[in-house]
Amino acid sequence: MEGRNVFETFSPKETHELGRRLGGEAYPGQVICLDGDLGVGKTVFTQGFAQGLGIEGPVNSPTFTILQVYEDGRLPLYHFDVYRIGDPEEMDEIGYEEYFYGEGVCLIEWPSRIEGLVPQEAVRITIEKRPEKGFDYRRITVQ
Ligand code: ADP
Ligand code: MG
Image (cartoon, rainbow, N blue to C red; front, top):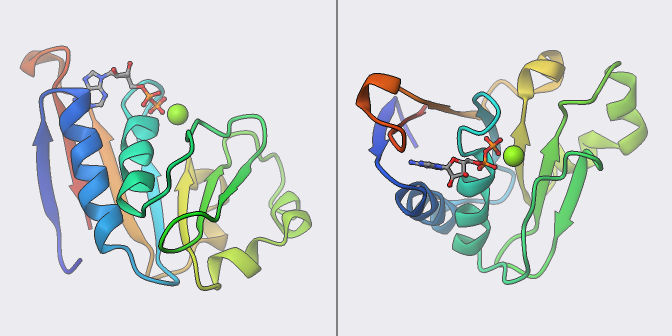
């Protein structure tokens, strides 16, 4: 994914589909930061992404676990939700480097909590609402 791409979706299904497409293109060692407010569609996107990797089981927000690992797809998926990280040292305890610099794909929700740890080359995905464009509208920037 070179440069900056903007996508617009008008339903959860379309966001899921975009996630599925990008999951289909995911490569070993890829780190993706997923930004956006609560309820914007990060989990919907992640569920599509997991499907694109061929993961069959249910994928939920790992809000209370920080890291959820899915190994039944084309590549391992490491789904981080670091919202509740208080101190970056907690990431050391998880052994995050093994995942960030491993052979699987990392998807990180709330990356701003651990900004110093995110690899420079990470893909940045931002999901935003635009109330004037309707309740189900989302603007998704990939860069
Ligand atoms: P987050 O993980 O960012 O907190 P969720 O993915 O759990 O958000 O929830 C997003 C909510 O927004 C869902 O209830 C979903 O049905 C709804 N929604 C409405 N329109 C869209 C859209 N275009 N893309 C994604 N989700 C949408
Ligand atoms: Mg979520």
